[in-house]
Image (cartoon, rainbow, N blue to C red; front, side):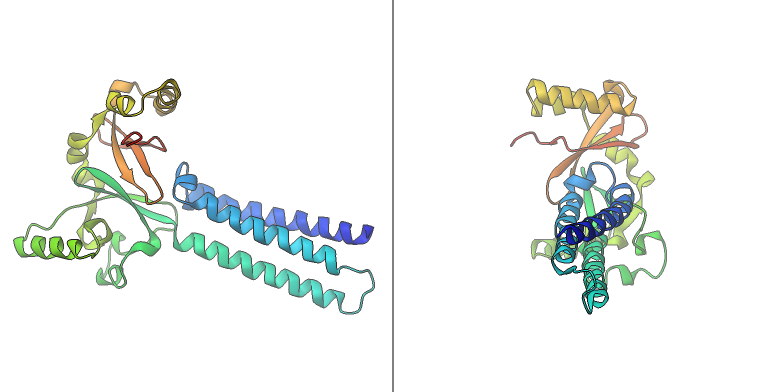
Length: 254
């Protein structure tokens, strides 16, 4: 029994070390900062770890018998299956990673890699908007078409369940082109306080403001729809630059 426990513990340490290495790009690149929790990165990663890191060492503890015929083969099979499961989990995380934060009309929209309708990215022959970033979400804007027929077609398509403009990269523009509108539509932080009353919420807002290194009057905020939950984006009141993404509810508890 002592040998089995020792083998299982060694396997657990190796699995934990590999999981820690996998965690680094997930947290710091694909799901940075508050997106790790709010965009589902934490839930998926914990599911991978709980199944993969725990199950492999447990099976090793059960099958390990010193000198057993075929033991080496058993351990190779266990390790191979464990790595396949880990690779599949990481692939799921990669496919659902946030790739664009899109300003549209009066809000931001978080777009994941697997949310784009089939063929939409392929319609763009070149340019940054036709590719998916591997290094964290980009900040872009989206402008509605100026052609009346195209506007009408898009409106009826959206009403009929088709993709909205933030999922159509052919309408993307550099964020610089929509900064003035973002500043115009943004609201002062005091509005956020009114929508999130209470001492705990006030302290959280104050902490976020302090973390930006700016005074409250130098900041504005806009909502961001992120799927699992709505987030708050703080922007510089003068430049419109995004300075912080927070899990504070932009609409309050309504």
